[in-house]
Length: 144
Picture 1 (tube, rainbow, N blue to C red):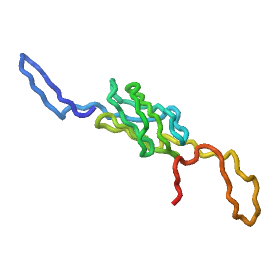
Picture 2 (cartoon, helix red, strand yellow; picture 1 turned 120 degrees about the vertical axis):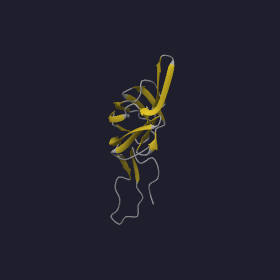
Picture 3 (spheres, rainbow, N blue to C red; picture 1 turned 90 degrees about the vertical axis):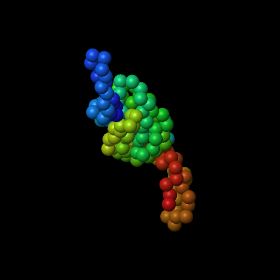
Picture 4 (cartoon, helix red, strand yellow; picture 1 turned 180 degrees about the vertical axis):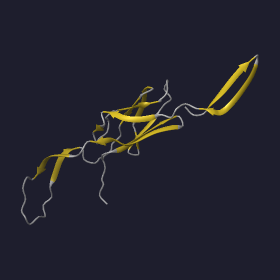
């Protein structure tokens, strides 16, 4: 991926040079399963090109957070096991040896959904605490 040494042998004489040849940079274009749960654990495949013809131990990040695991699948696919997160239109960055492939707004964590409130009604004077139940709330406390 990064600049490679090139050697030429002609009549038992060898000449080597570095920095004159490199492979095309990796490029990420789309995510198969472009959304996943805020709790993490989803496993989208990042589809692109030039990820290498063999496993170069890629590292993935979604929205600035490292994937729990990243697995090379092919020259055009890398799978990322998501960490906890939230938000929409998150950037995905793959690092393959010393080269990076990044995208803007490729992945979205599932939106929060409320399934129940307790109690279901309250006086207009307020002062009553509500318990909110649901899924895909932020995985950590976001209060100031």
